[in-house]
Length: 180
Image: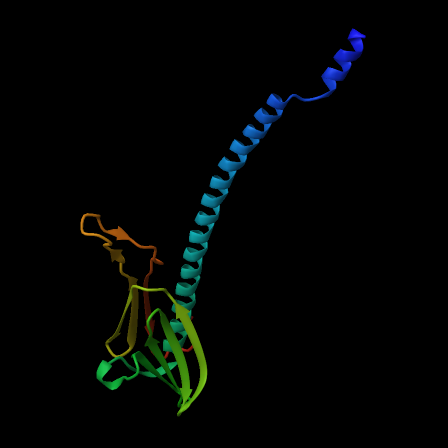
C-alpha cells in the first residue's frame, strides 16, 4: 500500500513547483519583451537612416544628370518664383525646376506651362539648401541638416530631436551629355 501512494504522489506536481515555474517564465517573458522593444526601435531608426541615404543618393544622381543635360542655368532668386531655387533650361525647350518645400525638395519638369514629370525627395524637417553657379558652367548643390533642438522647460537642458542627418554636395558641369 505504501508503494502505491508513492507512485501516485510522484505523478503529480505540487502547487509550489508550478508557481516557481510560472514565476520564472514570467521573468523570462518580461525581459524578452523589453529586449524585443529595443531591437524594434533600433531597426526603425536604421530604416529611417537608410531611407534618408537612399533619398540623398537618388537626388544627387538625378541632379547631376539634369545639370549635364542643361544648356542654361538660373540660380538668381530674383528670377525664380514659387520657392524654386534652381531652374535648368534644356535643349528641347523644356525646363526643370528644383523647389524647396517644408520637408521636401520637388523636381518639376515643364514643357511650357504643362508639367511633364515630378519627383519628390523627402528629408524631414531641418535641412538647408544652397545652390551656386560657378564660372557659368558649374553648378554646386549643397544640402545640410541642422541639428534640431528643443527646450521643453527652463530648468531642463536642450535635447536633440531625431532627424535624418544630411550632408550632400553635388558638383556638376552644364552640357556634359555623355557624363554620368
